[in-house]
Image 1 (tube, protein in one colour):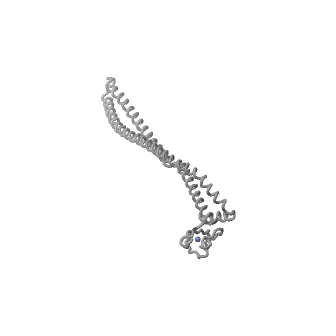
Image 2: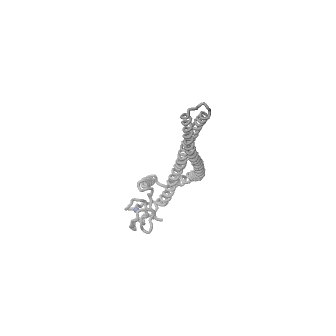
Image 3: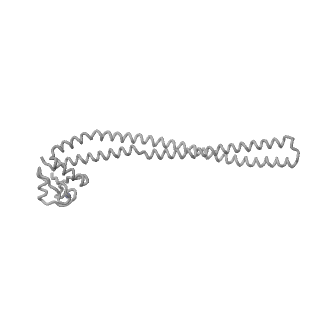
Length: 233
Ligand SMILES: [Zn+2]
């Protein structure tokens, strides 16, 4: 049995397993956070608030117009009631009617503007609602893809773990703990294969004796430069 080859294969399975873990975490995070939905909801809330303001302004304008019209009607009927005879008083009433006419015309202009503004805010609400629905639909299909990937990875895990266990059982416990310690201290790469007489991890040129040792079964040769276990195919 070639120990360094077993370690090399174990490392491949271990890194695969680490990648799977990282991807699962990433998928969970992507599903949990729905910033797009939050933002679309916020926009809809803002649009509704603007619409409520526009609507109450419009109601207020209508009430003002109504009030002035009523007042003008009263003034008008007083003017033609025949009860008021003093020319001064009649003149005042006439002036008041004219003033009310001008006020009403001005208010009606403002009412029209308010109506147009309200139409715009209603349209903005409709658009914000449609946008939210679009984002929710996108999120749902995105999530179903992510969930599919998650289930696939989860189904793979027992197979990878079984292979890791089988390889581990071939190793001396002491060798295994050396490997685990190196895996931790060397950024997930405890075993380096010899490539063109150099250590593939740190790139240093290896002395022939170390390359020779890396080939031997049951011998653990290490790179003098980076300390990793050497493996030569
Ligand atoms: Zn090295």
